Length: 80
Image 1 (cartoon, rainbow, N blue to C red):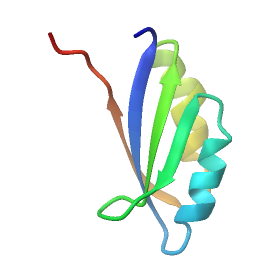
Image 2: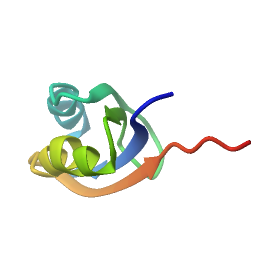
Image 3: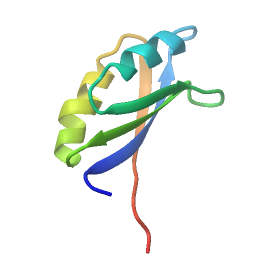
Image 4: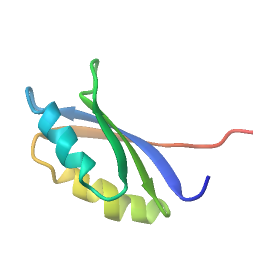
């Protein structure tokens, strides 16, 4: 596995999850953005070359999407 892979858990305003997921999926580096049930409304799988690129190229544009109220980014780690 090369680069940085992460899951981004997203809470949205009521009734905005489908629109948010659609806009998230258009961001380069987002490989999937799915509506889910539970404490989060959308979960996205994202990829970047490194942590700096993850923040700059993926997370920063994602946080500008209207209707997102909170995000939690969970980088994937490899455990031996």
